[in-house]
Length: 350
Length: 82
Image (cartoon, rainbow over all chains, first blue to last red; front, side, top):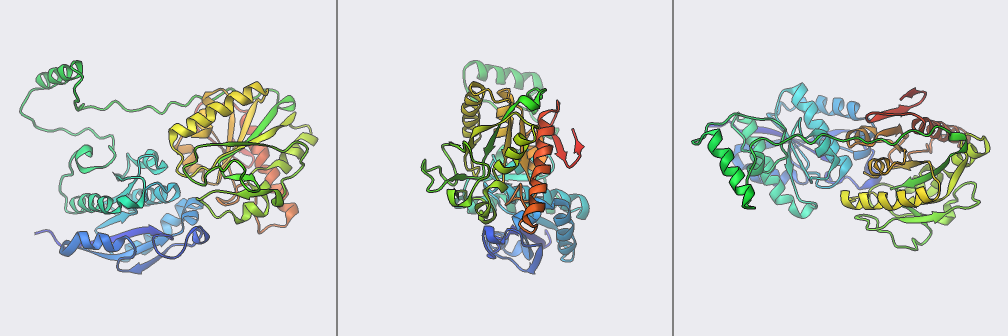
C-alpha cells in the first residue's frame, strides 16, 4: 500500500490571498497546511496524501531574481521533507508560470523529488521548461481549475509512488521530448503501414515519433549607420493617451494603437494613462518615460547618436496576447515602419 | 512574440525587459536587461538625475544591440554582451 504522500504546494501572492499586483514583490514565505487552491489539492488527495505546507512568493520577486528566489524557497521547502512538489496551476499568467516551472526544475535537481506544475499552452513557462518538468496542460482561465488540479495530483502521486505515467495525450501534459520503448502486439512495419493508410484516407492517426520543432531564429541584419538611422519605439506595456481613445483592451488585446509625439521632448504623466491588466502601473503612470523612453531618445538625437526618433510609438497590452494576434500586430507595424524609413525598433516590455 | 515577428519582417528589434530569461527563452533575439518589471527604464528609488543616467545606459545597450549581428538569442547588459 502506498504511503501517505507529503506534498508541498507552491502558489503566488494572488492565490495565496495576500494581494494582487500591488503585492507582486513580496519575498518567499512558507506556511503549514494548504491554502487557496491547495485545499482543492488536499480534497483530491484524500487519505492518500497531505499538503503539509504552502510556499508563496510574489511574481515580480521571483521574476527579477529567479535563482535567489528558488534558493530561498528550496531552503524553506526542504524543512518539510516533502515527497513531491506541486506548483500552480498558473493558467495564462506568464510570470507565475515561469516561476512554477523554474521552481519545479530546481526542486527536482536539488531535493531529488518529483515536481509537477500546470499552465496554458501559450504560457512562456511551457516553451522554456516542458523538457525539464511535467507540465499539465490547462485551460486559459481559473474556470478550469478543477480539471487542472485533478490532472496534476494524478501525475504527482504516480511520480511520487514510482509508478509509470501515461503518454502526454492520455495524462494531459506537454511532451517532455523523451522517446520510450514499449511492447506492443504488431510489428513496426504493420503499424507504419496502418498509419500511412489512415493518412492517405484523411483519417486521424497518432505518430510514434514526434519530430522536434527547431526554434527558428531569423534575426534581421544589424543597423550599420546608426547616426543616420530612424528608430521607433514600440511597447506592450499599455501606455495610451489619456482616456484611451481607441479603447485598447487591458488584456487579450485585439488591437494596437499608434500615437504621435511630434515635438515632445519627454512624456508627461498628465497626457497618458496606463491600461494593462498584468502589472502594477503606478511607476509608469508617474513617469511614462520609464516605459516609453522619449526623453532618452531625444537626448540620443541631440547627441547625434541616432538620426531620428520616429514620430509615432506603437502600443498594445501584452497580457494574454495570443501568438497569432502578436504576429498580426508585428506584420502591420513592420509594414508601416518600412514605409516610414525606420531602420530599427526598441521594444519595451513590463 | 512581437520582437521575434518584427525581426522576421526584417526590422532589427532590441527588446528591453526585466524578465530577460523569458525573452531569451521565448526567442526574442536581441534582449536588453531592463531594470524592474514594473519600471523597465526607471528606478523610483533614485533621484531623477541618476535615474536619467540609468535610462540612457539601458538605451545605449539597446542601440548597441541594434548595431550587432546576432545568430541566436543574445543578452545585452551594461557594457558587455553581443
